[in-house]
Length: 440
Image 1 (tube, one colour):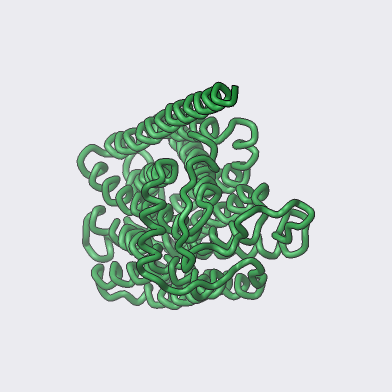
Image 2: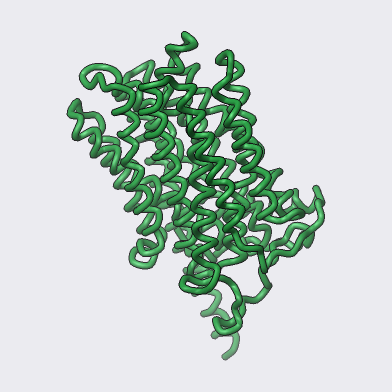
């Protein structure tokens, strides 16, 4: 995969361009946030909490799917829509809401989105039917759509470029903590009081995170509001979609999330069956492996520094593949080790791909991040639904087969990117050679 700055598209749609200056300031003149500087820790912790609330709410029913199936008398594939509807709605609404963030500001939109999402989260426990539950979850996912892309655009504008991967890694780490804590809480609470009380508790936790997020997040200093111009938005989107590097990054994010969505949607069903037959509380505790994702996403910046972006992606793919293969075992220890590797590989790959998008898009960063988030969560929705279908058709081996197919797609795209980078480098050398010949 070529360097993140190569091949970046440039659009002059002024109404939708980000507020970052056309030329990067020197380190001495750069007033953006930097690790160790004032405001950086508050900003990082605020967005970390936003990530916690987002993933806790978005996947609040995932660990509870066997209980939802039993309560409403529906199949695994039907219950999986309580997750897929939320992620699918997020994917559909993330782009239009990111456009609103260009007009009304990143912090404002993130605050409104989180407020609506937690309000709906408090209604979810009272859903009278599977259809009503799916509808509420879709509304919740649509509300959360205003947060991920706006958060990454906020970071791209307010944080110095050298610290961007680490800053986004912290946001992604919040995602992993939210996903882990939400599943653990729901698992143990549901075992004692049922799934409805469990998702209610997650809603209360999300309310607390939302309040702290709003109190801690500093006011933006590098944002300039633009007007809502549909034509300019269309030009910006077309520009991003015509950039081969961005398209590869979008596809890589979606494929990684397909694996992750499939594995964690189905794993609860597998662990309730023989030879494991685990209770709901223990199954919820399995999600402690998300801590591995917290570490791997936060370490993504160091991986890129040592291995380069392509090397970091290959490592993430290898780790995920090894985890999928280990999870085929009937040994609980091997299954847990497999989940650890899958989680580490996924979060590292996601952090590398998403930060590369933010660095590649020199203009229209909110839309570039929104497109990434859109296909990323479409990958989650597809992974959850297809993973359940594959599990119904072929058991856990069917779900693993789907995951291996997705990671092979990541490898193909990364190899293609490497080839494209070599071709571009040869073309640049040839142009320089011709220039020297002409000069003589």
